Image (cartoon, rainbow, N blue to C red; front, side, top):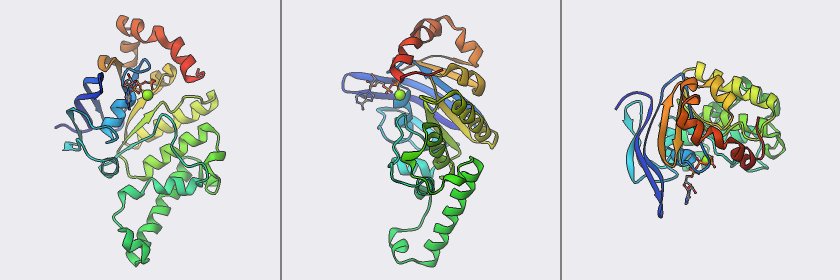
Length: 264
Ligand SMILES: Nc1ncnc2c1ncn2[C@@H]1O[C@H](COP(=O)(O)OP(=O)(O)OP(=O)(O)O)[C@@H](O)[C@H]1O
Ligand SMILES: [Mg+2]
């Protein structure tokens, strides 16, 4: 198996619905890979089966050549793959600092018992976690918000908190599911700047987005899904002028805009 985050031949069915029909995707370190396609084409399902939330009926997933197929979500995080959800899943009353620090827990080795008894080792790990979380918040311009409840953040800041959580977990690959949905254009620009910076640090990013401008700006390569198949793949320019993509996806963007509640 080759380097990068590689999903090969992914198959997922929900009852009679074949949500993925042999999808191949490669996310390379230091690059943003785009994943686009109409509503229901299988984008989130691909995220879910790579990250252990849905068990694929076929296909293999590997990270830098190591097989992670069928691992549970916390094991996938520990292997260096972080993700965000299309609908943020953070508890509204949690502080930004806690939310970001919790992104780390899957990657630490302290046992619960060790933590309960306050062993020096567990306490040292706890301190390291906080330092990493603080550094990541600083980098993303969130440090001044550390004590603010996430429920009080704008959607744009909430998306950055989700990115920070992925980063502090030590992820080498992050998967963002429609991170720009519902953001203002200023928030989208800030998010795009941060995603670019993440890739510049050498991480691989898989970006699901209906925002074509953002895809064009950020992605080195783009795959288009249609009813669980990869319809085509290439540079943003190649993909966006492909006749099948124009017919199948770009022509439907008005519907998607309605479903997403507005985007630019
Ligand atoms: N948990 C589930 N149970 C049953 N069917 C599901 C489930 N999750 C997804 N599906 C179905 O699988 C197909 C792919 O859905 P998925 O959510 O992956 O699409 P998507 O490309 O992410 O769409 P969107 O752009 O609307 O987010 C759809 O037909 C959907 O109804
Ligand atoms: Mg989705």
